[in-house]
Length: 67
Image (cartoon, rainbow, N blue to C red):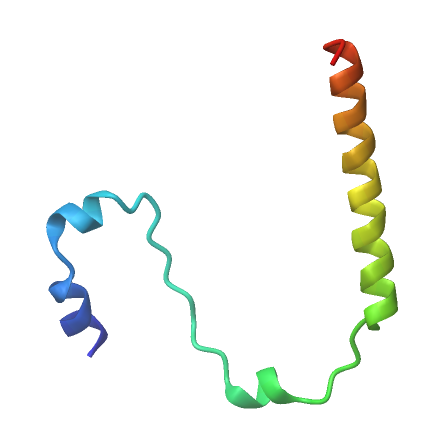
């Protein structure tokens, strides 16, 4: 079925795609299992830190350009 579907994609469209990767199938049990992840607060703090760093970088760039 995969090969049949891939043959339906036209040549010009395939020419626009630079990277072709085969991704192995992952069992549903592995995706849906009970896993402990990071809390929303931890993720939020990490994202906020990244925003702060980026804001500081942009501010420095504007200062160098006298704007």
